[in-house]
Length: 141
Image (cartoon, rainbow, N blue to C red; front, side, top):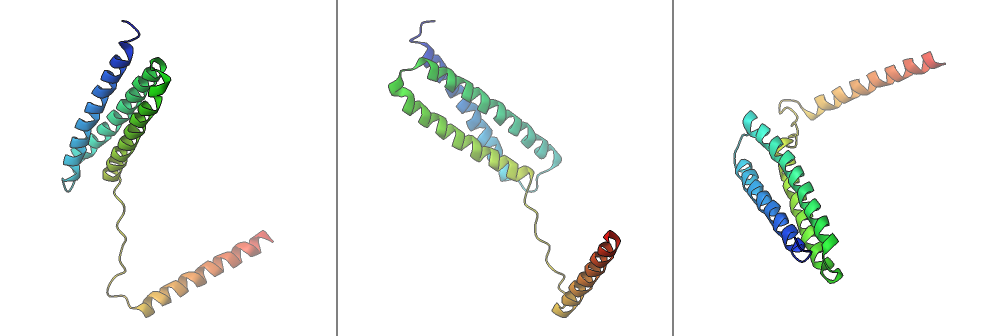
């Protein structure tokens, strides 16, 4: 294969990887619209995350091989392609991670507990902690 054809080969291979990532994005979008996720969905998301990592590495490999064979005046355009890919892969990875590890919902205080009762509980905890600290200080002396 001649040197002239190598940039086209690397671009084509990089394009195939981008197409695979597009397909991966649509699968993640389908899971994002599903509520709640079952165990099979979570396993699928883990596999998609692994696949994204592999595709990202493959894209970078083709990109670096392309950089080795192109002219210097084309480097800036190719860097933009890599930057766009990195942004896209990071966004997709974040979306997958958010589905795998949803944020914990804050627990509201029970409605039947008054502010006075909450303050009394906090005071008891503070007194207990003070007693523990005082005991630890005596033992260390």
